[in-house]
Image (cartoon, rainbow, N blue to C red; front, top):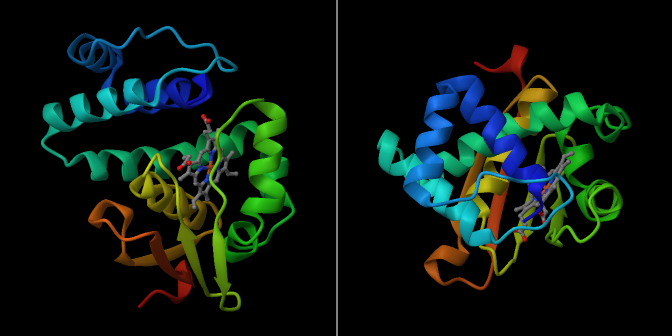
Length: 184
Ligand code: HEM
């Protein structure tokens, strides 16, 4: 996992819970805490930090990853507004993950290990995202989708009827979006 991911995790933990909490997570997980954005670090170190946060807060590791993913999008948006500017709503951006967004990420962070999704497009308000990755970070994907919706002023519900974590061959993320003003 690239150092930028750890940098963003540090930022969202510190902004929300303070620098002491980040230090506690480093202590409890044994993570080094020194990450250069372009460097690569073991996935296990990220998972260790997530598990430490889960033990500290009582939230499940999946909820920690979802929270992190949701918050991370606002930080990516502030740093790389051009990645979002070409799209006017969530499904437009999500449909371009394979051919625009993640390739741009790999230009910015050479060696980034990004997933390749399959999609079932359903118009402006829905998209099915099929996720396969040995990293099995579907909770992170859910959070990134939530953060994308928030960025475009939309709400999203995500059904997850098939899951790598339940030994299915892929995760199926059925996403339905609504503009917030239209949320009942
Ligand atoms: C503009 C928005 C986005 C940016 C800048 C971005 C950037 C990144 C970066 C830097 C990584 C880490 C790669 C590495 O460290 O090796 C990553 C991985 C990942 N991204 Fe994105 N991403 C974006 C949007 C999304 C969205 C909306 C999803 C949701 C479907 C998503 C799903 C993932 C997943 C699941 C991974 C983990 C790698 C894996 O599972 O194999 N990303 N992304």
